[in-house]
Length: 510
Image 1: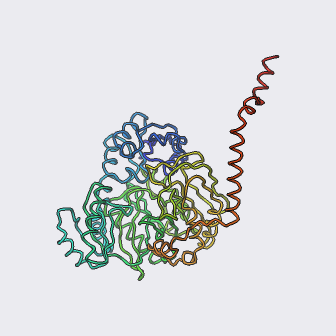
Image 2: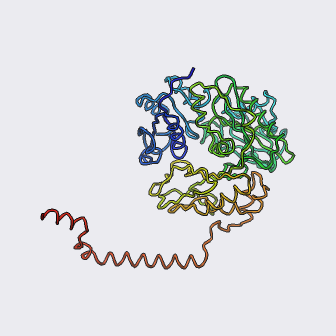
Image 3: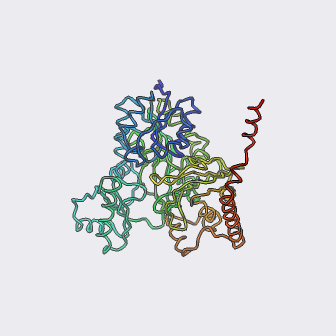
């Protein structure tokens, strides 16, 4: 029996809001957008059937305001809420508020989010499900635990270690410690950052796996007990512990390991009665052993590459599961990759300045197309601003081909066509990456970008040839001269009539 679902409020912004709006429209569902002051002319607002302002630019006064979003859902007549990713997507209080308001939350239950949102509780679930975890602490180390006790625990785990925020994500509240003498300062910094970012200073300790690959399994679960895991995603190209390039399948995963990873992910999901879309993340060491890392209880940024290699629309399935349909995908086929897909996250960041954010106005935009360029999920257009208040992701570019070398070649060609003016973006870095011999050969791990930046020693990713620099100087000089001539001849321009004026006067004399 399907639940009524006719109008969906998207509690998000940017490219993911546009992606969900398109998925809803394909299924005949009306959509409602919410927006802050600086987003009033954004793409997601233009695409939705209805749009409502929810407050000032800071997220805490708009996109993180549960009460405002619930009020809009009620007044707009929405019967469901899709959280996208980020903002409130993994907030159990938001999922609970939707349920209490009689709205369908398109995601897992608040209880599942609560349980898997705690890193230490999620590790306990994985252990109970028989899935290996990285050696570390089982209980949170709150501020009440003295530094001396933490030092003893760290010694038992064994250096090098990682200190991680219990409620964390995105690399925040995380510190690497290789020497016991560094522990106290790293612990204080991690607790402080965790408190600031997540409102919870509790941390835990894991032994650091050296030069691992980051591999993850996308899965779907319905309300009838069925869980279907998909082909793995390779997410090892990261900066500051955040992914910037993903691909599927992984060169490091053979069919046997794929089956083991999928079985482990499904076991964790079944253990908590998981429903809707989620992702189990693993670390794969140099010996081919894998360890549970964490679970993301939402749709992932990198979901398009799974859709490309499995021919499955994950947003459609999120909506179908939310209205109670049975998951009837073939589990065996879900683990068979059809070709190879790569995604590059186009951020408004300057890769030559350690990927610092580069907000501002997009003065011109040319997006790539052509064979194999299957997706350009974007929330940016020429003339629009990339605000300083939110994540600087402006688009995701996905390339598909029958094999990895061809997918890389297509991505390299598309990046050459991609032109974003007015702001710095990560496109020059990706152009370099697609030609790097180590990347092309699959010789990388999660430390790849750190090593690459160290080896380049400040060499920019985008270097201007001398002839282009000369042309730019000439163009600037011509522009300045044209501006000056225009300023000196105001009277002439004032007396010149336009064709519109002359036509209007002629019409008036008839």
